[in-house]
Length: 124
Image (tube, rainbow, N blue to C red; front, side):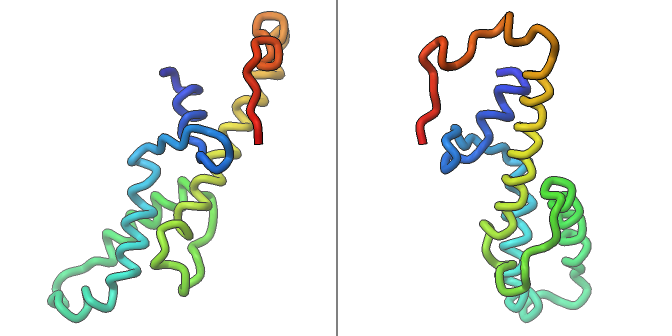
């Protein structure tokens, strides 16, 4: 698969795409939701010398670059979907922007048949 195909395949199933997500996109959301869910337990069993904030800071920075959004509300930080949704939304916007740029290239429509012409349509 080329990069364009990989990007399209990673869009959500609920939006009519394949939903094949890369671990690079999932890891920060999963880690931050897990850290928020277990923070009280971590504080009770780990010694004070263990600094988990550094790992959370790295994951938070990575998540911010993937999502282009602010952190979920405190009451939602333990839910991975709350972290994942902005990443997916931002990713989807980037894919559509890239497709629009491709479609507006001069002569593109002459070289590529439309999906309607070849019988491929996306039904909702």
